[in-house]
Image 1 (cartoon, rainbow, N blue to C red):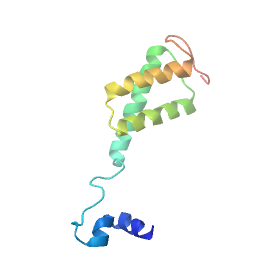
Image 2: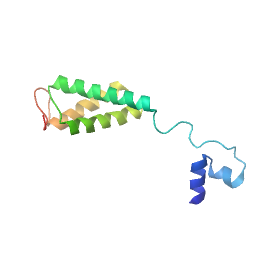
Image 3: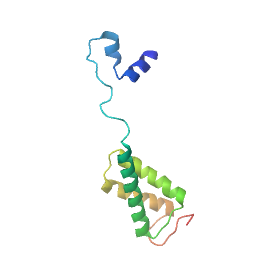
Image 4: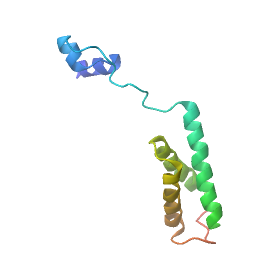
Length: 110
């Protein structure tokens, strides 16, 4: 277990540590989290997509529900889904939050 932690901390493989034969190379080529600028851009995009769907449906979400929905959309964007793929998911979240169809229904907390 200590060797595995050492390998993770140093970015080396267990095989290289054990044999010295495998070329030393990082375990991960890119950072596991997006940069702060990318995270901020994804938050802006997610909030805008959600708000556009809310406006189109004439629905409002309570701030906590808006935050949760935005966080889910941000995670999807950070996983690499395109905006066009996220929009139907936002629509589905709204249908779930409002109990069905579009038009004139207000979610709890409005």
